[in-house]
Amino acid sequence: MVLYVLILKLISNDMESRMAKKAKRRRTKRVAWTRAQVAELRRYSKDKLRVKKISRLMKRTVGSLRQKARALGIGLGHQR
Image 1: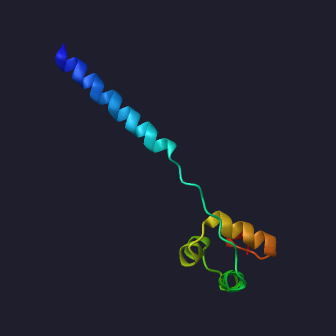
Image 2: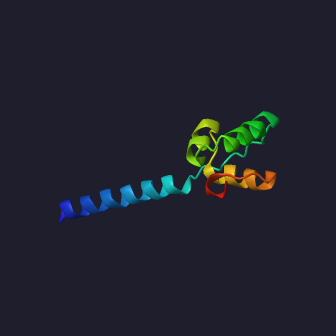
């Protein structure tokens, strides 16, 4: 019986710590685009590099690259 109570306490403590970790979500810090980065994106688009590769090179998400390309009116990915 005592062993059962100890196991239940361990499980509940573990769940509490997991929930506490889950609650601490990091907010995404938005970084403004510089002229050099826009020029770099245009160059990569012209060279027909894959979006995933551009993402790694520029250290930006695929979604942010697609949004910026759309705002600039340049093709990116399968739309080229």
